[in-house]
Length: 282
Image 1: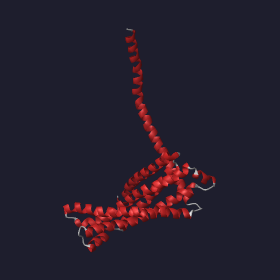
Image 2 (image 1 turned 120 degrees about the vertical axis):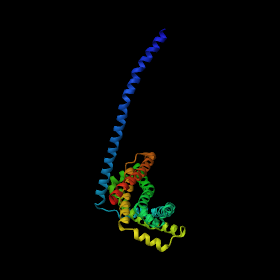
Image 3 (image 1 turned 60 degrees about the vertical axis):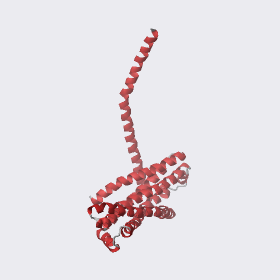
């Protein structure tokens, strides 16, 4: 009888604790949401301050020419094979897919215009930005993150050398300049890929295809793609530098910084692409 009474008392004692958990769970959810929002705005504020300091330091002397030349080679020259292969096969696939769809409406003559407009306006800058984000953004984050872990950045500060001027500004400046160059080359290669498939596989007339391409292409189509490329280059390099500069200690911190740099740059490229397209072609 005593055991039964004690068991009932234990059950009754557990009821308030379960009720407390149910009552406090919405508060915990609100706290988690609030913490996430505050963390996001805190990170956004640090990123904006990082960008402002990078731009301010980048236009003030002294300038490190060797660092800029090195980044021109690393970001521009070494990215040419990746961007070129992406552009040529994108143009070839686009021509094939356009032909497959347009034959249903007897509109095969519009393939040249679709290829050149899609390449110059959207596909070349976006795909080049994503490819460079995967190659250059990860490399920048890993390199600067390793320098942070091994205290090389602290050593630069001790030697009165600004890390923003020596490490970050040359990379951001070069990425903003070189990605439009890569996209311009990608435009030519991508249109050429569509030309090859259209002429040698689909049986189009070479002269007719080229004339249709020139007739539909406007200067704004190319310029808008190059402006997008400059914005994407800035995003890729600034995100790589930011995550690498604020990398946590250890190999795990460098790996996380590299992953965050690529993911954040890719997402921002896609988001900014919409708003830039809305500005140019609304």
